[in-house]
Length: 434
Ligand SMILES: [Zn+2]
Image (cartoon, rainbow, N blue to C red; front, top):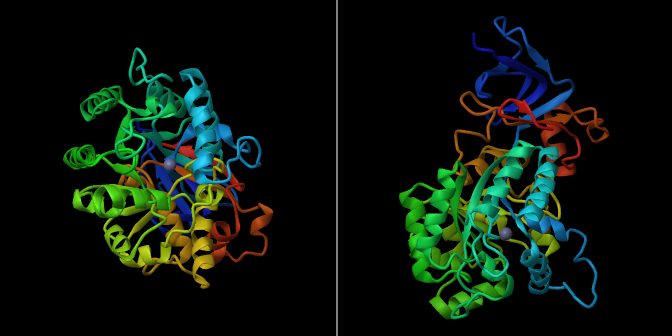
């Protein structure tokens, strides 16, 4: 007989709505079979009482570079190696990127994925470019490093989608330099053959041209059409720095978003642009047909600047969030800083509320359902709803941060005043992983 498990919590977000005395029933595969208010009379004998808790879908971290966790705390002082701009920070990051072997990389990934599980993150999009040996020579299995990331995620129990980066050059007309030789497959054909083998090995994959700086127009066009033809997620860093826009205008006569639009990336393609910080009005309109992954704690750490999040939302952009450099691993902080950054930028309050949704509900949707959609997992994870996996995080309402908060403001308090610290348990596919 099929074994089902019930979960009960006084508060939950079920399919995006606050439900009191919430009940979720999960089958033996970890798939939600029904949800509702109150434990039904025909509930299975085993119902897990989650205690005084708020149950929400597990967070989906749509943009991570796991290895960058290793420079946490190491780029915060001026000295011989002065990381006081994005580009000099990148030098410090490349120093680590150049020396990691597969064992060290897997250890770093395990470290960061454990932090993710503890922060209620149940799925990660790993934007992965450390493909080959330090001198660019592929390992015996060209997917060695990618498989190590997958192994780390499996060991911790979180889902992973490998956003496999295609990288070809340091900039227009410039061959890859230094650590960048590790990132390069040599050709789009070699790249596509490699990720096909990775998918055959059981990994979920996405197409990830690194940026318009690192990929030329012809290659980018092929990658966009491949993603569309195969219904794979397409992720790309976009307009994180003014220098990227200037170089793009010089090479292509348009902005990075303009180039992607010319290549059809915003039509019939599951495209996520990461950062989208320096945009003109035409770019904002274009990105209204796409998804933007904001990584506000990394963008703040790197001094990137504030993206025009409010105008993007008004244009129709769907948001998701990423921990990016993993200096901070906490999507509550990403969500809050996205809203607070827009308040600071505009001198207004309550900026990122989608139609019919509160700010906190909009942020929760971005951090869960929309992140799943960005990774090609819409309908699989990201909502507590029948048919989706029971990927969930349990927030401890006995945490002092919730004292005196009214029941109908719990999510507002958590996402706009809190951190991931009150996450007491994390479930993936019905199994507790933290
Ligand atoms: Zn990134």
